[in-house]
Amino acid sequence: MEVLSVTDAVGLVRDRDAVWIGGSGAGHAVPQLFIDELAHRYTEHASPRDLTTVRVVGIGDFASRGMSQLALPGLHARTIGSNIGNEPELGALVRAEQIQAYSLPQGVLSALCREMAAGRPGLITDVGLGTYVDPRNGGGRQNAVTTEDVVEVIELAGREWLFFHALPIDVAVIRATVADEDGNLVMDGEAVHGDSLALAMAAHNNGGIVIAQVKSLAQRRSLRPRDVRIPGALVNYVYVDPVQTQTYLTEFSPYYAGQLRQAPPDGAADAPLDVRRVIGRRSLLEFAPGDICNLGFGISQQIGAIAAREGVTEDLTLTVEQGIFGGAPAGGPDGGAGVNFQAMLEQPSMFDFYDGGGLDIASLSFAQVDSHGNVNVHAFDDRPRGPGGFINIANRTKKLCFVGTFTARGLKVDVDDGHLAIRQEGSQHKFVPDVQEITFSGAAALARGQRVRYVTERAVFALTADGLELIEIAEGLDVERDVLAHMGFRPRVSPDLAPMDPRIFRPGPMGLAADFARMGETRR
Image (cartoon, rainbow, N blue to C red; front, side, top):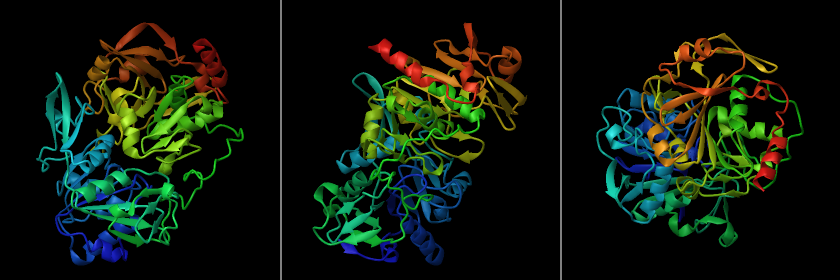
């Protein structure tokens, strides 16, 4: 192992290399100094050129930091990831068809790292069948200049599967907290472990190099072997960033690192009861004591805080796809981290658990829903985005809640002590005849026997063999005027149409602790 400067580390990248960058989201275990220097070097020297850049999770702050810094014409030949939505400047190059781009599920790319490390030719999975990742629906291509197939349909044991091809890997850039003189890496200050080990193994076993960013160096044999996440034999080069921060937002949290437990909420007042919180509360009503859960991005991120306010956090096991098992997920830009967790897993292992059906329930966002129960979360407006871990999470989870406002663009809603009032309707329908692209297949969910709900501030729908069925409406609203008139199709209306639980529209706790206690007694 050689210690060098970040300038020299970036100098190891050659034209046309396949460069994999570790980490996640808004700076979680991201080797940010390498990104900074790569952008600077290319700006100054127009080299290295024509790279294939790969990251399992989108890396960026939804503005100019992260992969957006690498939105430099000529630097990329193609880019591959699960969510380019938080990399808008790079997304603009994709939209302009200046580079090739693929959007593949987060869990697929994560597992693919491990398959490549093991020398296997790719990943066989049913994740993505019937979605936009299926080659019959586009194969994950994000523009017209992207033509090569990276996934194919195969038949095995009498079933259809998707086979995702192994990808080239010349350079893997990862991040840890400390490296010793032999290159052994400790990640005890990181908010996630991510795919770091699998990436290092994949690069090493496929003839590539491994570069690690660390915050500090330690003497040889000074690290506890049980603390080493990546052995030095896999690491070629290390550079030091002494001002490395845990995430873009947080310099360092011992709670994110799992070094301390955060005190529980002190019973302070609820956040304002707005439309997003109403939806989050209604989604939480689908949860039951003992459930192992995943909370998606956006509205669903609020559910952890709502559960804490209701005093039911200990009755649920909340997970985050980056590897946080138990505890409370972080929200906002720090989403992907967590506090008070039971364990911090490596990301491929977390997706093994998800792909195998380990989740009882997930609450995930939607951008569009159609009459067949299909969901689009990754392709709307004209910006390239991506599903992140959505497709893996939704694939075999027993119960799914897709959450979102009923309409978009201009919706104004008042919530007043048990009632919902629509002051201004949104101009954009989100319930459409056919989604723009399929991120979740209703037909596949029915075949798997999943229980699916679509939760909005004014209505709740269920997925049935006949398509969507309206099963709940906010009290005081009119089915025709306030719901059906703003849909691109007419769903069935349940003969047992019920009012939405009025507790979700009232300030203060909903009393879920008592509900959970009763459910627990019933189960016993």
